[in-house]
Length: 100
Image 1 (cartoon, helix red, strand yellow):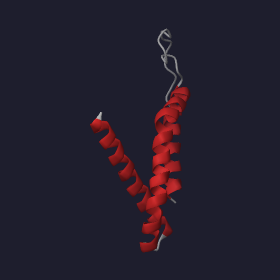
Image 2 (tube, rainbow, N blue to C red; image 1 turned 180 degrees about the vertical axis):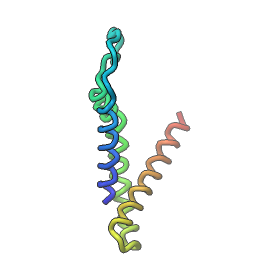
Image 3 (spheres, helix red, strand yellow; image 1 turned 45 degrees about the vertical axis):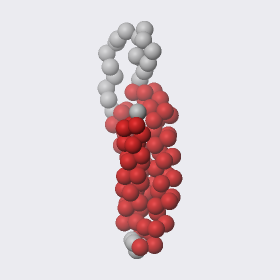
Image 4 (cartoon, helix red, strand yellow; image 1 turned 135 degrees about the vertical axis):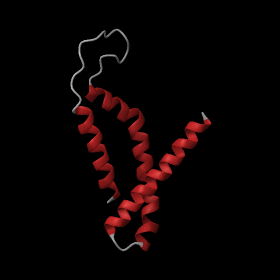
């Protein structure tokens, strides 16, 4: 169930990015200055999204077991484990950014 929440979030980002209208013509001399929204989404996904997604999946796998033992509803257990995983990954990211 937590994977469904992550898929919904990813789908919303993709639809929101691809629905942005095309930018007017501009100077393309700088690096990454003429990247389409779809290409920008792929670049951001590779460099930022993939590590965050892997962290979410690992923390979800570790958190889901204890939550599923205590909560009878699969939907509620998946939602709680997704929220808890987001909190864990957010705390790790905040600690990393505060250290820099």
